[in-house]
Structure formats: C-alpha cells, structure tokens
Image 1: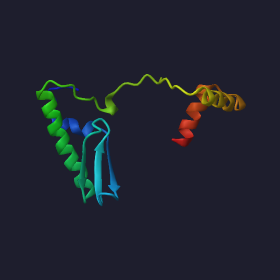
Image 2: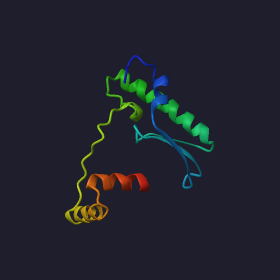
Image 3: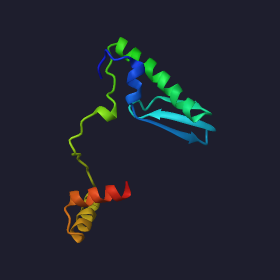
Length: 117
C-alpha cells in the first residue's frame, strides 16, 4: 500500500462484510484483510462506519510504527494457480468423476467450484 495515502482514504479499498449476529443481537462488521477486527452496532450502516474508523486508526498506527499494512484483496495480483493437497482416496474419487465426464481434473474442479460457489 502507498504509505503517503491517508488511512481514511485507504479504508474504502478493503473487503467488508456486515451481517446480523443473533448472539450479539446487533450487526457485526468485519474486514477480510484484518480478521481480528470487528465492530458491533444495532444499525447496519453504523457497524460499517465504526469498523472503518477503527481500521483508519489501526492503519495509521501501523504506518507510524513502520509495520507492513496488508494490501487490499481487490488490489492483489493472482496467478490463477493454487495447489491443493487431497488425500489419496479423495484424489482417486476426483479423478474418477473427471474421467466419467471426459474432463481433466482441473476442468472438473473449476466446474464444481463455479456451480457450487
């Protein structure tokens, strides 16, 4: 992340989720790049605003301390590759399903992820 950027501007680039928490009887806002941070509020939008304010302070502190500030997921580069270890039995099962559909294992897995995801 560009350290000359103001933390208040930078917070808008992160990946947020605001969901109702039945346990807390409030909305909880979270940010994927900082999994230890959250904010509770009875008002959905206020939960997001509260978390963004805390995140701006956290980023400012990290910059001041010379710590690495996580890059927003939206700005990261992805190669399109990831390695996945399967147990021998599951690998065999996946290979059989792929063969039955006349697909490579990669094609079969991508198809499953797109359908189920």
